[in-house]
Amino acid sequence: MRSEDALVRALGATLAADVRGVSVGIGDDCAVLDRPPGALVWTVDAHVDEVHFRREWLLYGDVGYRSFAAAASDIVAMGAEPLAALSALTIDATMTDDDALALARGQREAALEGNTGIVGGNVSRAGTFTVTTTVLGRVLGERAVTRAGAEVSDLVLVGGPLGLATLGLAALEAGRQDEPALAACVAAFRRPRIRYDLASSVARARAAIDVSDGLAIDLHRLAGASGVRIVLDERDVVRAGGEALVACAHALGDDPVRCALEGGEDYVVVVTWDARAPVPRGLSPIGRVVGGQGVALALEGSRGEREVPPRGHDHLAR
Image 1 (cartoon, rainbow, N blue to C red):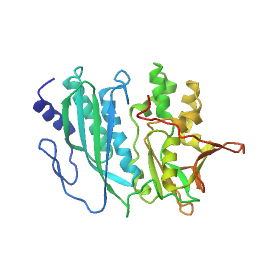
Image 2: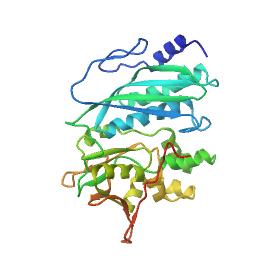
Image 3: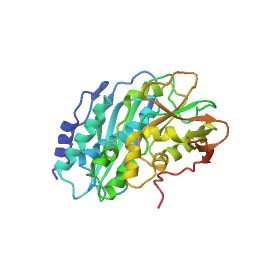
Image 4: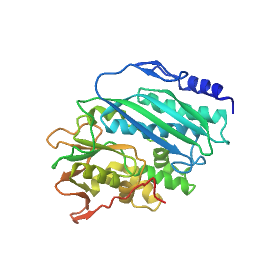
């Protein structure tokens, strides 16, 4: 590994992008941004080796891409657009210069998809390889959209496929990542697509949340914050995952409904929406808001409802 100054220069050259509103980027003590009008949102997300990923499953570019995407998805879920990002790397003894630069190229690709860039950060050596990404965003509407605004009779809409990432992880754990039938779910785990194009629609929602730990547990969080009950439609939940969800689940001997409800790292946005307003393009209905508390699943074929426990990823679970 080259010296810190040399590596920072190389990373700066790799990450270089023309970020609007940024007058000083990588290479000084701080980045300098012009303050935009309106409210700002700010998030941070850590990706830790052997916790969020394993390097035998991912290229360094994939790690860089998904680490940025995981943070940026929070920005979209607040009805905001990303402005600029910071990245802090802890590099272990096995990493080379080429590894670090490949990671930076993945970060830059993900940032450019959101029309932004990484404008600073930190590099250190440590016993564990981690990537910590901070993203600053600008609210597009009159207010940031939180988890607390859902109202009875709202529709519940989702902005992307559910359950694919957890199936991709299962495929990687089983060493089946090269099977064509599992390509879609493996890609969803390695390079989750963040729907920056939905941010303006999310800005008009009543409530929203980023589905990173699993639909069930994240909807329990939204329902609790809003003081409501959410009833999901089993058929629509599976439909939101698309044909790939059903095909990959069957190929791996799993249940597509369970994967859609409990699988984490989808990085899609779920919103509650005024049922009197047209549903925006790119958002699909999966349920409704009613009075009460908790989350339930309306079973296909008029078989009633069942309670959905708050299962999903818990970072502190052992």
